[in-house]
Length: 548
Image (cartoon, one colour):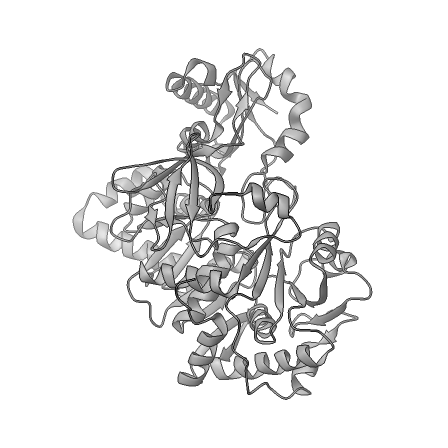
């Protein structure tokens, strides 16, 4: 390590002292915002850190967090860190079985339980002997009460400096590639990632963040939690996805991150209120165009935004271009849990749509012989918890193997062309890379989600779901459009890549039905397992467009 960077606790203490009365966290509970200044939050964090130390837990013990995003999620995470322990954040919508597996694997001793949709059900996965602490506003039976513990514990005043090399958190991956793995990060890897990001971004001050993507996911944790704490900003939370628009309008963030599916939903929402032909017409009139753009951004809640980001999975360049016409430059970024989300991003004013941008300062990139993207930086993980063999497989000469296939242009912009492992072989012995084909399909406004499958089949099939607009069309005109789309795409593909059939799935793919990860990425293996028995029938159907 060449440099030592201030840790998340160093930064929290700095702003707690320099701006004690400034807003730090704001959370809507039953429509009423509960506000926490840096000082108010600090007292609770310090008291909870003291309680953790006095509860019989040892330095370096694991403490889990099971909750949707809320003010006390951040406070619990900081208290765990301040107490010299290791946080293990869990997705709030995983099954009780998965909760049990992760808690046992991580050897967590205590768990914070907060805002959940089905607390009784999900808590069935928590071992009986484990200490459970319930957040305020979301009281759970049989748990210790956060407020009681804070009230009866004197806040820590003297803090021991955190060892940069000490394990800080174990972040379990969302499981697109199989069983979740525990990614280990220490205080240094995370601080390095934040400072590298800040070095590549115009100075951030008094920024307002909107938190709704799972905080246990590395992108939200690094951009929103660390972004606010390392720059003295404030975080507003969503109450529920039903109140998303209302909460976003109230917050008016200056920095906003959304995964591609959210950006697509926002576009659908805008087009529902103003059809494309009308919007295109108005955007051609100079003064009207300015008013329209400003009005749309303000109504969305993005009227004062400085930076818009997308990440977690590939976004279609046509979506980015569409928003750009509205004066919204979305910066696509690229990273993994395994490198603290620090790899590449497009910089504001220099975005190259269709790429994930240039590498961050301190990140070295190279391509393997198979064009796999390999990255090296001080933000790379220590390894997978209790998995030395898997850890060794992830590295090649200190470079992290991303599993993504890519190309780098002369200006250093990286384009992701697919997943190395997502490629499959047809029965004709030819390999097919799904991602580029899916990208072509998703540029069509009728398609909401797409997945190319066909391992061992004579030719690939396209499974997809329809956009809301498409579902409102008459069956005949929809079928005609889909036939034309299939023909158009096949003309652009190599013979062995051409799609045999377009399969319209009856049900949207969601987190609830197990096909999307918590960050809305498609679980290809789950789709394959669920529908593979139908593939031959669909392939042999007499029509090109099959409604499943």
